[in-house]
Image 1: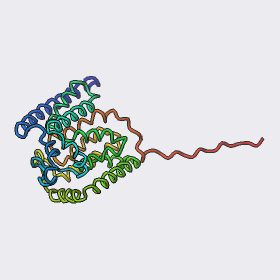
Image 2 (image 1 turned 90 degrees about the vertical axis):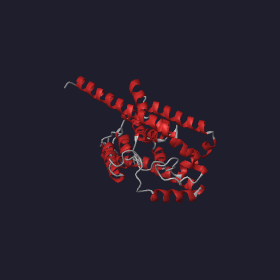
Image 3 (image 1 turned 180 degrees about the horizontal axis):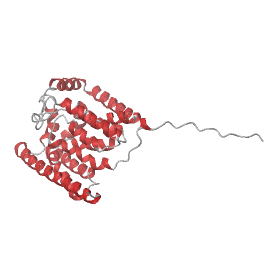
Image 4 (image 1 turned 45 degrees about the horizontal axis):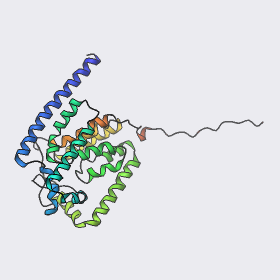
Length: 290
C-alpha cells in the first residue's frame, strides 16, 4: 500500500469512527436532556451549598463528588441566577473545545464538538481538565484542577516522573499544597467530609457499561502503563487516552478529554531528562610558555 493511499485509508477510518461516535453521543445527549433537562451536572455544582455537598452518593442527581476547594471556588458563582450560571458553563465548554480542536480541519472540529455534546449539555468539567492537560505539560500547576476534582485521571505528575521533569513535578506539588492548605483553613470540616465520602463510596461503580468494563483499579494500571509509555516516547497525545481509561465515571462525558489530542500532537518534546547525557567538562587548551 503506497504512502498516499495509506494516508487516505487512515483518514477515512478516522472520519468514520468520529461520525459514529458523534451520532451516538448526540443521541445520548438528547436522551439525557429529555430525562433530566439541560445542565444536570452543572446543577449539582449550583445547589451544593443549599445542602451538605456530600449528602448524595455518586451517580445520583445533584451528587457533588469533588473537593471542597472546587466548591469554594464556585461559591460566588452560585449566587447568580441558574440560567446565567448554566449559560456561562456551557459557553465556556464550547469555546474551550473549539480552541482545543483548532489544529483540526473544520469538519473534524464540528464532529468533535458533537462527540462532546454530552459534556456541553450536562455542564460537566472534563473540558477544563482537557485544557489543564495541554497547559500542564509546560506549567505543572495546571494539573491541580484535575487532582482536586476527578482525582484519578491526574496523570500529569506521573508523566513528569517518567521523564525526569522534577521542576514541573515540584511546581505541581507546591501548588497543590498551597491550594489545599488555604482551602482546609477555610473549611476543615468539609475536607474531613470529602475524605469520608470518597472512602464510603469507593466500591460504587457509577457510569455507563460498568458491568462490561474492568474494575477501576485495572483501568488505572492500564492508564499508568500508557502514560509511562507516552512519556518515554515523547507522545503526549496519548495522555488524554490514558485519562479516559482512568475516568472514575466512564461514559460519553469523559470523551471530552480526547479534545486535548489535537493540541498535544503539535507539542514539541524536550529530550527525556534521564536520557540526556551529562555535559562533559571542557578540556582546557594546552598553552606554551613564550
